[in-house]
Image 1 (cartoon, rainbow, N blue to C red):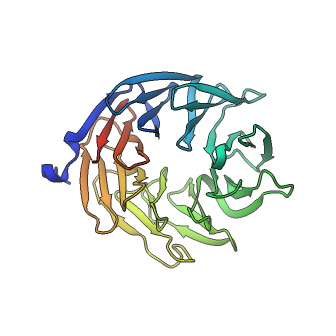
Image 2 (image 1 turned 30 degrees about the horizontal axis):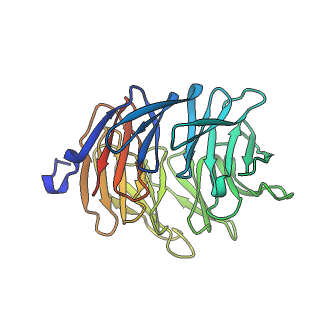
Image 3 (image 1 turned 30 degrees about the vertical axis):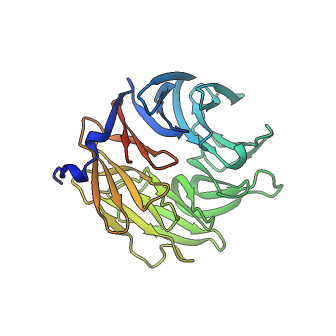
Length: 334
């Protein structure tokens, strides 16, 4: 892929940021972009470029999630921390055994979930905490879009847990190691990344299986388009879009392949208001791809390290990106 004319490039609209350390995630709180660093801190960057850092953990940050009001992080210090838009951090809980907090999730109405080893915990906005055990160390957590229901990925499948119910979690089985679960915006499907170069999914109503293969590497990033019609994924030398608009999801259908490139797509994020996917590649390039006609806009030229984080602001006017070497930026999309 060659560089594109200035009218189809956003490179000149980028406000560069030097985070000073590896970036593991990016979120927005209001108009401020927040870069989650691999060690201790969150870096807040305002639209005018003003920066400030907040120390959230005493050590490495292993996981993060956001509901747009706070950013929840889990660390190797055994703490679950919520940081608000003022940069004020509050410890929500600490693991009694000091175990690493491998995964966190932010849910509706201020609910938070986290995992430590084979245990998963859920905290409601009122502060009550429930727990459940899973067959192996949790590989990821995801809240359903409505109600207090959590998908827990683990060895040989996914458990669907209602923390407020007495019943045991519902188990959806598929042999293998599962990571990074994601529930569709309509609540009808759950999809996981697998240790192999593939995804697996279930229709929740009847546990019907969906095998999604054809990747060149393990998939580490999933994002639903604004209307839930497609699931965008990395893991190959193009952006792969699986169709989910019908009652059967991608069963019996082929995915759409967008933005073919010589390097692997490793991170994806979907625009909140338009049919656009942001794709970050292993060579540091960032593209915006329109899903309706596959049109591409260059957002960042290749750099020195892989893209590790992408996030759109809630209004869709800004795209934040971060890389493994600490290079980052805010791209004006207006």
